[in-house]
Amino acid sequence: MIVATTRTGRLLIVGILLSSLLLAMLIQAQPLPQITVDEMLGEASAHENNEVHVRGVVKPQSISENGNTFILAGVEEEVFVDATGIAVPEGLMEGTTIAVEGKLRAYEAGWVIEATQVQTGCPSKYETVD
Image 1 (tube, one colour):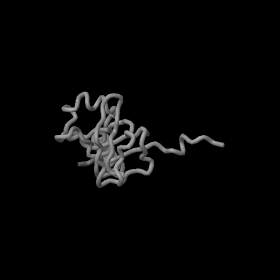
Image 2 (tube, helix red, strand yellow):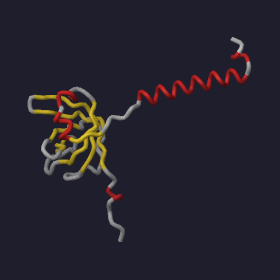
Image 3 (cartoon, rainbow, N blue to C red):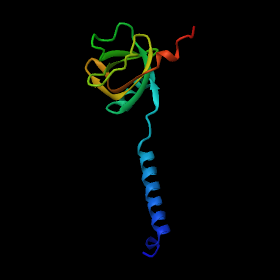
Image 4 (cartoon, rainbow, N blue to C red):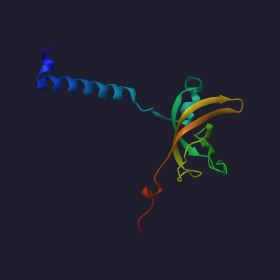
């Protein structure tokens, strides 16, 4: 190959390879669209055993003592969240809107999200300045 023998040719080939690699990474890393609890459970069978990114409100009096399980509520539906094995943020409080990523599974008792990530809002962002 005569092109690769010059410095400019080698730089061109490396640039093309790096650009191709970057493009392949961007195609692979598409984020999940965030949906509500009601939207997810309205089409639960389509989401079963798949990764979901769900937004909802932590149901009052549903957080376990260790904070690893709770119920995420929508307007009409609710889903149990099992966050065992991951670090749950300190901002997880009853009545707050959060987002959960994980796999939706069907159990005898109902639907469960096996969480891989729990995202809360930053409380200081909403505090008033005196």
